[in-house]
Image (cartoon, rainbow, N blue to C red; front, side, top):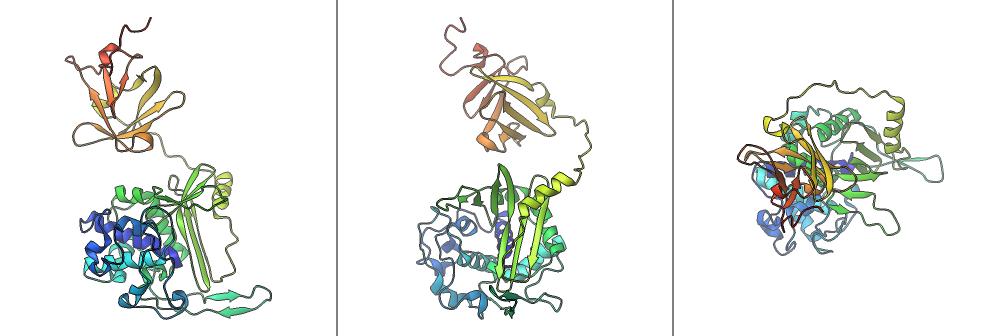
Length: 388
């Protein structure tokens, strides 16, 4: 599968965060002290977003087609090319470092950790470190003649977390299902969703901004529609995984040649939607939280109308005609916290009067009232003489 391995490595690294062994904001050298002089200022999160400013490839011979380097031998390839956090620069070396981080903090190896923490819980029995007897041979196709050239299957050692894994369409489809729907035995839903948030844009001069990178995931914007996944290649093999995280529709492609991937995977998902009936979930009447039902309806931010509705256990605030909105989830303090869009992470507080009514909402210092600039809403700056 080549570089789809990086998505597995990202999941393992984020599991360290779930378990409190590392923070995404930690300097890498805090946990790998031998890198103190090599990676000043590089954070753990930047390894996973290709934002660490590291080289794309290793020094010396082509690592994908030669016997692997040990961690000590890899050290000469670890050096900054760009200022951390400023640009997307794809780095195989960065994911090798992430894999070493996993092994060091788990007091194990990257591969043993992957087996125990990801492959076994998800039932990915056909995903292996090395090719099995059933593996398709890696082939190069001559560009100008009908000829084949066998490619070697290499042991990449310290570079394994960047591209070593072998798998099947069946296993990668199961992994894609995990990315879309989650499995908290493997990773918290909070961090799984955070993997899918664009961190750095692939700034390719002359091209539209259609590709970003999250934590170990490509994020593709195709006509306003978001797809996540990864591609991969090793000598003689290429792969791609693309999935719409909202619907779970996706494509996995594995080929045993380096002649190129001709399939339009995102176009194939669109074809699927056009020709295969979509099964809608059965509608049920969900009882909302009692404190939510009396605040639904129309609210005004200044003169601008918004509608607050209940969707299962969430609230949704949506502008009537353009503007800022979000979904909100209740928190332990009895308030609501934004999940997405402009108000992601912002608190929505319902202010109650002595009779239990709700004259206004406070959202990140914005006042929402039942009528435009209602004086009962404690309007910042005052309501003046009101409407006239």
